[in-house]
Length: 265
Image 1 (spheres, helix red, strand yellow):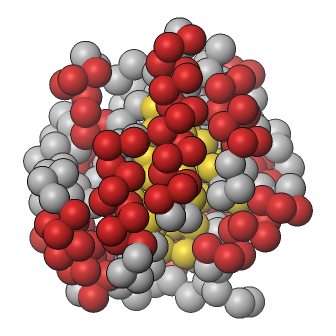
Image 2 (cartoon, helix red, strand yellow; image 1 turned 45 degrees about the vertical axis):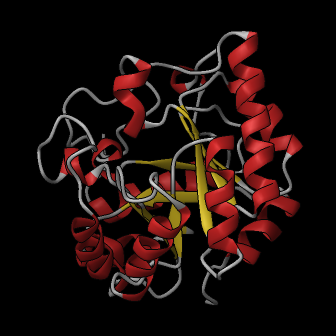
């Protein structure tokens, strides 16, 4: 099958075909996810929690991301590889972001880099995309800002913050972002944003109407204690990890996941 590109994802959005995404952090799982039909594999800085045992993503370094991305890249033939830019690897200046994004692509094999933040990050997104670095945005609950947000809380529940998130999404699209992750927000808000943007939205705790869905691999396999409300254990009653991943892909494609029990209002 042909490799998935940003153009592929835009075509899927236009056709109303859901995009199935998962995180991975090593070669073996990357290969398994790729073979199971996952469209987009993300090397998330969530590895700080599920792989390194930290209580947040903040301690993760660029070197960590390069290492895990390089491992994952070796296991992929079809899926698009998106890699997180870790905390304080892009916030200081667009030039800093370019240097570190270049490392993730050149040494880590990333095809798209992901950074968190709204309109204030738009100039950095523009700076990167004008220099050939594809960018994925991230709005709503942004884990790198967990201390500022006061914890892992649903975002956009009041009119003011919802309006700001919508404006941020439009700013990122205008700056050249190729897709945007929407995390932990009311389903109605995520639906509105998805309809307003021409680029794909990937939801995680953002309801069923985003153009795609993503979960942390360890959450959907039931391996991580205290999974979030928006996750589901696809290993329940299944005999293999491979089948669990295939069931997840099928559930996303058929729109049976996420259900109401995984959704914020």
